Image 1 (cartoon, rainbow, N blue to C red):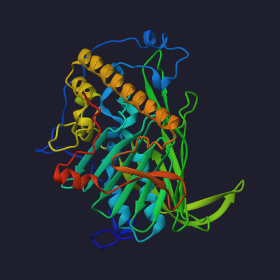
Image 2: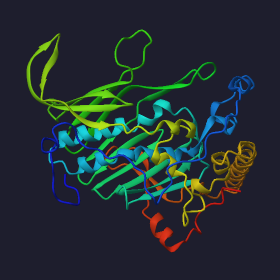
Image 3: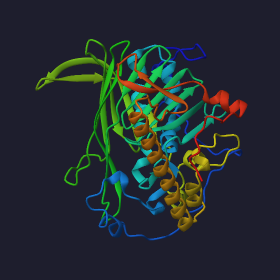
Image 4: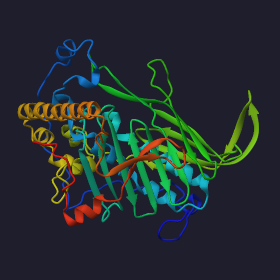
Length: 412
């Protein structure tokens, strides 16, 4: 697979010590900090005990447990290490490319190790654009396409020759120029919700599949155990070709770094498991740690601090314009909570009106067209056959023309 430069590379041609991956750095054109998080205590137990028996998604949670980003923005943060995709798009060897894509999937979990704040649940029709073409080489558009069940769709294009689309809560997929790959996220568990200090763990198995070549990568996120002496947050995996032969092995942690090594031989096996001889491991990805002061800013990275920065010309449904989230970022939490309640009431009223319209149409025997997303359309995946939401290609033209007539009125 070639990027736009037309100059394919291999890991063997890179620096011997590690593959350089550039994370987001300070830029004079963008902010690098947000207001400090206020010290406002609130008992989660006092809220939870009044919600016993209620459906979790219908429990009104105050912003005190949030961070000032929406899920749309939080998903966009996964492209902090997009240089891995740039490099993958230039690879000649499909298994080597798979190893880099696997490193990218692991890097997406890095900031969650110390980020326990809950992102804002997007309102139906809420969008978020992020155009970082000039400095980071990608731009993406995200939209909340369903409320029950909650689901968002995202489309991201990289100038390095790759495209990623995601449906959060269902699957995440990477599509290169010629070789479509897909994967599903592992399980995330938040511990000590009621008592103690919150902490997050990711565990389970992930398979990344190349539907064109038959290559795959099997990753295992080891669950944390109080009784284990093994490295916590450990990830290990192996890349195999269509014949099932191991080509690369991966090992590291999802909050620090991931090493990859090419398999150069298989001298035997132990208890039915093959022994793999590998070349010297290289660091494919290493987390760029923010300064300590970012602990007072919800443990945000530099990129996270920039995601909610006000920007002119975005759609009126953009998360940057959501009033309760903006009030929370500014430290005005009482006003944020009151505004959040009003927004949710408005959303419920809109949903109730649609339900009444649907019932009326059924009574009159006429068809009713329910809610349809603005920037995505539902169709079957040509590779897997599963129903998916695909970007309709119209957002950036509408932004250029500043034509937002199709956008729903969702904010106050």
